[in-house]
Amino acid sequence: MRNVTDINEKEDRECISQCLLGEASYFRPLVDRYEVVVKTLISRLVRNPQEVEELAHQTFIAAYTKLSSYSGRSKFSTWLCQIALNKARDYLRSKKRERVHLDITQLDIASGWADPLSNVVADQEGEVLAVAISKLNAKDQKALTLRYMYEYDYATVGEIMACSKESAKIRCFRARASLKSILHKMDLGTYFTKEYNEKVG
Image (cartoon, rainbow, N blue to C red):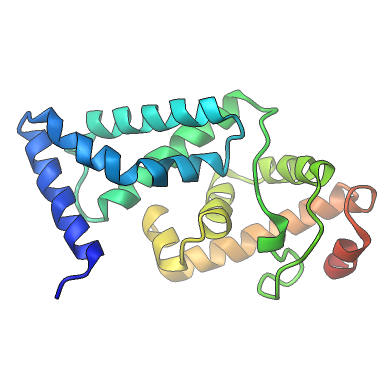
């Protein structure tokens, strides 16, 4: 018996084939299926709900326009999420003051793998973290976003970033190390709680 993922992928391919034949109405089921996924991904990066709606709209327009370039080597959802991430990243570049949402409790900067931190997220801390993340290169930002915000496994992170699972894992590890270094240089002691400082020590 086929699972839901297999069925969805088959239906996606059928819709894409019909769209490429000029049947634009077949794109609607793809929007209905992935609209929540796209909006959730973008909302992890962009605060403004209206901008999230607009960026999601732009994502689907871009996907429809570029549909002929979809090779089928990856899942349609993976390809679509890549477009959404690009739209969100472009928006953040144009709106430098927009905060990036990253739950510190999901990212153990000190060890990279230990148990989550707790009770350390506050508005000031979020601002400092957003600034620190903005100092990372684009690939490191994307790796952290996919792994810790969207909670993709390393295999999927690698698929989206066009690299192997092991390379994605290394990229995430190095990105965490870079973020830790940036935070220390920013003198966290004036921003973060005592518990957090003890853990990153």
